[in-house]
Length: 151
Image 1: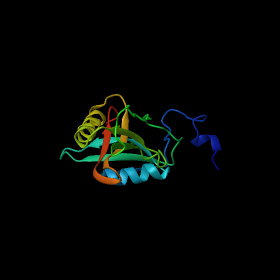
Image 2 (image 1 turned 120 degrees about the horizontal axis):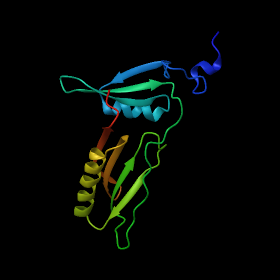
Image 3 (image 1 turned 45 degrees about the vertical axis):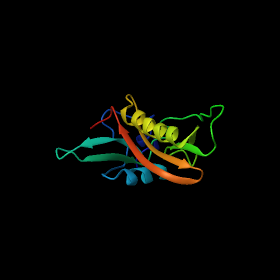
């Protein structure tokens, strides 16, 4: 029987595989669900010649990682009727909320957040962005940003 350290970072040796299972999926919602379960790490993206992206995951996770944290932004004079939320799969239901003065400002903020998340460089991330008016969900977008770890 192998030493318990053989699968740990302490016993890591050159060429050792960190994850017992490597799995691929093409659907960002599937990726979200697997990462949110806590049983998988997102390892990267493989871009196929036909343009399709294959998300690469490893299990069991070596450690729980937090990709990025967002703060709450509330300005004086904003309405409690117009907001966007940003959620990550490992946030355990917690979200970052941004409040706006009008429906137009909220829609512009929603588009700006998506653009910023999609174009961000330096880290990978999986984000669910939502736009609300009151408690009514007006729009939602799942952003799967996978730079610089393309395989």
